[in-house]
Image (tube, rainbow, N blue to C red; front, side, top):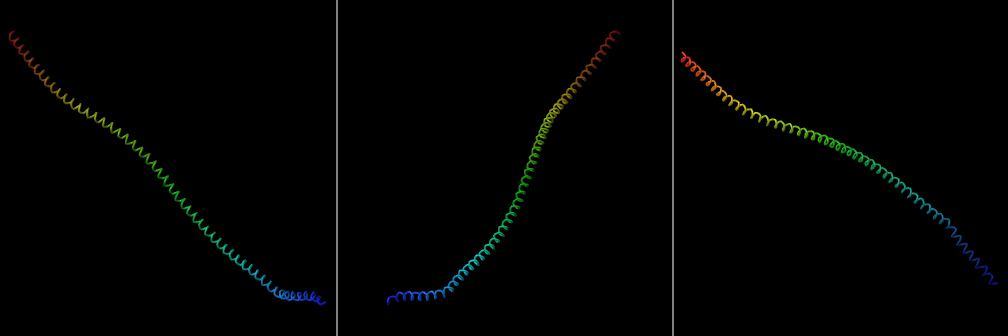
Length: 183
């Protein structure tokens, strides 16, 4: 029977050792478990706090970015409005310049036409002037010839008158001689 108590004693000693180990484990297990749970809660809380902080920073960054985009959009709209005004002013200036160019082109054409007409009129007047100068030269020559002819005619008339007077005197002398012969 000696051996039977070994069968009984070894499990009993194992049970006592297990009970002591279990008791030691059970007494520190709750504290360890609470510490682990608390550590997990602290981790989660830290993570949530970090997430909240990151969210706040992200929201702040998003708001700053939104404000920046809003300012950029306003600046872009202002620049586009200014560019449109400049473009409109340039278009108006171009259209005004084109209108003035067309107006001046028409005026130049009209003036060229007037110059051409005046040149033609001047050419006609010059032609008429040349004709009148030729007529004047002709008339001067004609007057000189007429005066020369008048002088020649006067000389001829004087010669005729002198010849008529000489003939009348010769006839009177012949008649007086015939009267004297007859008497």
